[in-house]
Length: 486
Image (cartoon, rainbow, N blue to C red; front, side):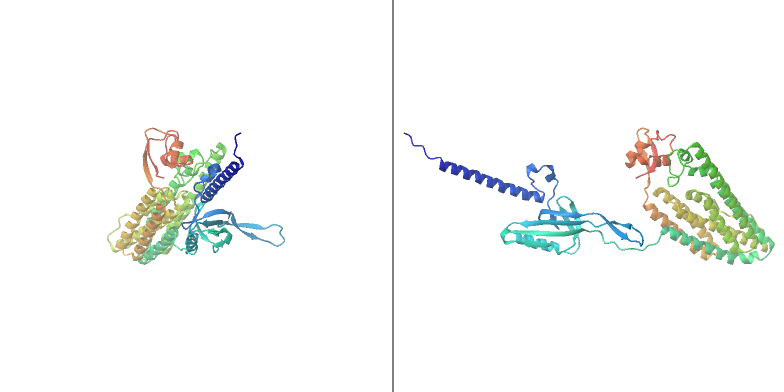
């Protein structure tokens, strides 16, 4: 008879081994779960979500995250009114984002970790928080960091943070508006021109009827030039730039004016054309009246009245022009006006020359001031055009400044130099924020939609591209053209 050993000790050993294996597995799983709280070494069965978590840290000091909560929303001011059942809620903008985090640090060096975390919490200013799900944030501690420790938990310190989203420190600053400064210096230039005309022409105008008539002749010539400028600006061909739809494109409307809109019905388009024609006729009629006032002011023998009338006529030219860019174009010849009629070499001839040259200078300076105001109201479509306009007007102002200096018109000279500086500063500042023009070359003719998407990443800018290039058809853009660089 064979003795079979008892199976009880074997079963006990097997049970112990199974339990040990389970404890070892659970310990390994706990280690993986703790690592998962950091955002690294996630458990394989957790899926893709754990892969998105990042190791948590505050100012570079890492810690484990147990949980947390965030606050997002808008700042609201609630206004109550008597005898009204509802309130008006005023939106004051997005509220600061609040982030509350609960976590812990653990390890044999937990005391050293705590000291580093305390140093991070007591550092002045905002810092970088890496949140497992929100990512990297610039925050500040809204309240002191709280640290809890328990004897039964051994080498673990529990942490609680209340963070608030931090922004840049911004102070209100004051600065000059370059456009407003241009307007003010233009007003000063008008006043200086009036003062110089009063001191330079008054004595000559008092010599009699002949000198007054010379002032009327010179003023009338400039007024006729202004009337022609208004006729040009209010011609239906130029006014059609303001028409909506595809028709306006064929009149080369500038990009900053008259954007393309959906097609208009023929009846509505005819009504708009009639309204434009009527507005042009009204502008021409007003210009005629103001031009007549210039001649009347000249006949009075009062240089101050003549200066006021000249400024009013130049302003009328700007008002009659629907597009500020066009106003600059039509004012340029007026700003270069000079009466060159010969005068006798006698004493009366010298008085006539003084009146002729003084009135011409008065007219030119009124046009230059109006041009500066028009430029301040105009938004160039590109940095390149802003630079071209700046240089063009600066050259006209330079020329007139030299003339004023040669004639001894000191106040006008100084005012024109200040006006030039204001115009240059204004267009330089505003042009710096605009895109320059660039030349583009392609191997084939492409539609405007495709080119807008390719150049700017926005097919919606196709209309802008068509206005810049003005092709025969938007579906067949030229292979080489100049347009905004960005």
